[in-house]
Length: 223
Ligand code: SF4
Image 1 (cartoon, rainbow, N blue to C red):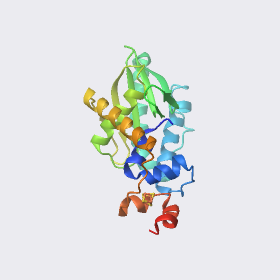
Image 2: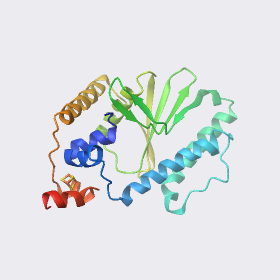
Image 3: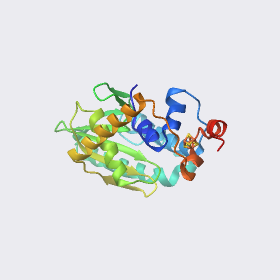
Image 4: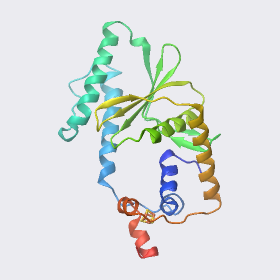
């Protein structure tokens, strides 16, 4: 079984919820909180796929739904200005879109993931972008970058940019080898526990409140 960064997080939060989702293949209850994240990711991807990269300008056809105007307004303005600056100075060759929202698997580490966007620079380096709609914990983010460095170990990612929509800012995150080693250990640790069939529930007010498998747990554990 290949693990994603969200399945690793899920296992670490509650092994039983991981089992419900990934071993028993039970369907989780819908969570409206996640819908916003999905919508914003799709809009960002659409923007680069159809309204900037291919046409070379921001098309007026790109409409932001009113409910996401605040979050996406800052993103659109920033990316449009950057793109227009590069065009004006005939420097579009600095950044070339490499991939966006593409499913990648890496069997060496037993992981898979979907990077939000990667650009290739003129110096053959790569810039990785992540879009975050929720609150950001910089330690968790550094680990996410560590995960992507393992996932994309064939390319040289030099810069990691994080779009934090809630605070309308872009963070440049640094990474060190220590984090990558830590992430690798984490992955192996979770894999060992899964192989040993360790799926104990971790009951917590917050975790259980948001859990999509609560109904199954109520049956089994009488929560
Ligand atoms: S309801 Fe709580 S204990 Fe049950 S699977 Fe979800 S997080 Fe785990």
